Image (cartoon, rainbow, N blue to C red; front, side):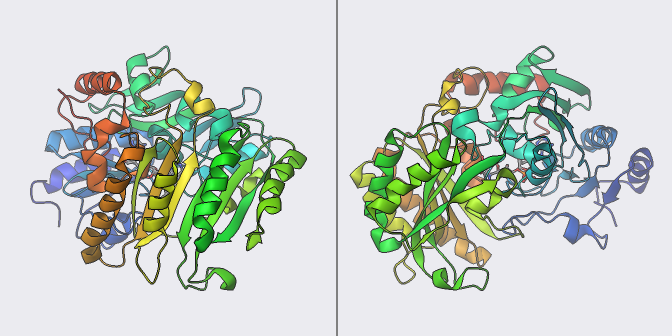
Length: 463
Ligand SMILES: Cc1cc2nc3c(=O)[nH]c(=O)nc-3n(C[C@H](O)[C@H](O)[C@H](O)COP(=O)(O)OP(=O)(O)OC[C@H]3O[C@@H](n4cnc5c(N)ncnc54)[C@H](O)[C@@H]3O)c2cc1C
């Protein structure tokens, strides 16, 4: 069976033109192929193309236009903005080559590559990419939205480190996009998400990082207020070599969690220091001299182990993510965070409320250098809840909305697009950008995708 509007002959023609697979709703592998990493995403594409090459992507785009299907792109499904219902879904995960140029200190990364692959290959040359907390996240999707990881305060956002993209446009053309070629598109794709063109590959700058001093300090949740207050003072004059966060966690009672933390609420200080190890030790000693934690997991580690700092789930999970930029960690804001984020007898559905320290190299880039917005904001908060059943969504979303509503006086009003998903991401897209940059994004969208075929990523609409 094939989607009713599509003819058997047109599908056969497409299959004959591409190396990859066409997967239709009646195929045995349809359910497995349409899955996203985030199991909360339920999507039923009209058809799926599992691309094996740039040319497959271009053919799929031309076919979608001919059949008037919207086009969705998925590498891992960590950040689905609008499910691919009734769309032609292009899966890029088989475009998975990475090439390191140790002389130029760059990496060429294909669209389906996860950060862990780049990390491993770059480290062979003593180099590091600007990956985020989880090596399992797709490098391209993460970078298109900004990309803030454990090197962010020193080396900035991943999007600021892109040298060029190779793309397929919404009308099926293959273009090279850089500061000198199609520079308007290059400007917009750095921060503007995947709604302007489909990335086939990108070249990014790498940095000389091998050993870092990183980990977690764990304190009981009933110390959350004093820990966060101490954190605020600790980061006031923190060097840019330190990127850090605090996270209030309500840990589930599952065997994956060490026994002493199972089912407990805690507050964690997370960090990654990339200067001399002894200086990192001195920074953490301030905490140990202040109050003894339940556990001090900071240690010198090869950068290949950076994923252990946040220890994000590797396998697929069913989750909801939301977030906001916080203007200042005032006493009142801290009180509200503790009130909503610490679960007392199940009072909070949140598994994690993390506030990361931004600034540094992120804020030094000119506000109009590319589309990415909210460079001046200092603290990005992300709330994560697990979604046990689809029916639980509405009450969890209401809880998060109440939390953010009360925090409003301490928020900047901006959002970080990478930390939003689904409906909220679509409704709040303007808050991800400076007003003039959003206008420019709209112009670029109008030029490159006037019919809005690429409508499943950030909600930037043509004029
Ligand atoms: C466990 C976890 C940890 C995270 N940690 C961080 C972090 O530390 N810092 C941070 O900034 N963000 C982080 N994120 C957010 C993450 O960066 C976004 O969810 C990102 O969009 C994921 O990209 P993906 O390619 O893996 O996911 P996908 O869902 O496959 O793609 C995400 C978006 O990018 C678009 N896209 C993907 N590939 C292409 C392409 N080739 N061309 C055009 N558009 C494309 C998709 O259409 C979609 O809109 C994290 C998310 C999770 C779930």
